Length: 234
Image 1 (cartoon, rainbow, N blue to C red):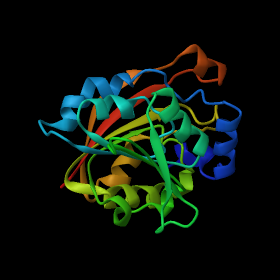
Image 2: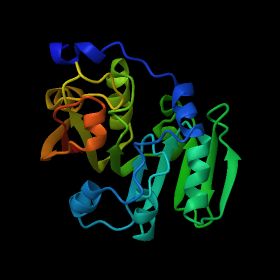
Image 3: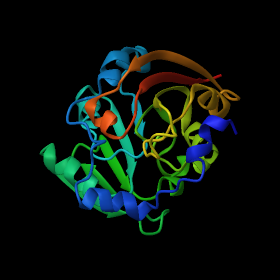
């Protein structure tokens, strides 16, 4: 492990802490608009295909999901906080159903009436391709950067198992000095993205943007880069 990762290597967020953040509405990571990087690179991800199945790991109540469904794509998300899932449907005025998932004890799946958005309320590591098959696209914003650093290899293996042969995986990562902020969101350097996915996939850095805002300065950060990667099976 490279030294730069050392300050955050042992940091652990329990699932209950994420649920607590939603209960208390401490969700500064939620964005009320469609993410600008998804808008910018949607053509790169869709690549001329119609009706693409998108996977959203740790989806929260991302408005991006409805945006994609309205375009004719379908979305499957996984989120540990049931409140986030319910708020997604309520805030978008979507009628939804709720049912148990026999293959995952304790899990529920929430679906809109059109059945083009299915959100699983469970631990992401209990989800697998046996539940919903593989996907033509993955939008990973705030997921790899949120999971516990020690789980990254397990996480990347899961993501790769969910990728269909034509999958295009858009990954958003953050670069900053981890001595100044404990995370989450955590630092995920480019060389680690390559180490996690490069053995089985092509990894292309699409853009690196200065993303430092007043919110991040309040965390104590002096710089913050947002990096967007496109990962494709090879």
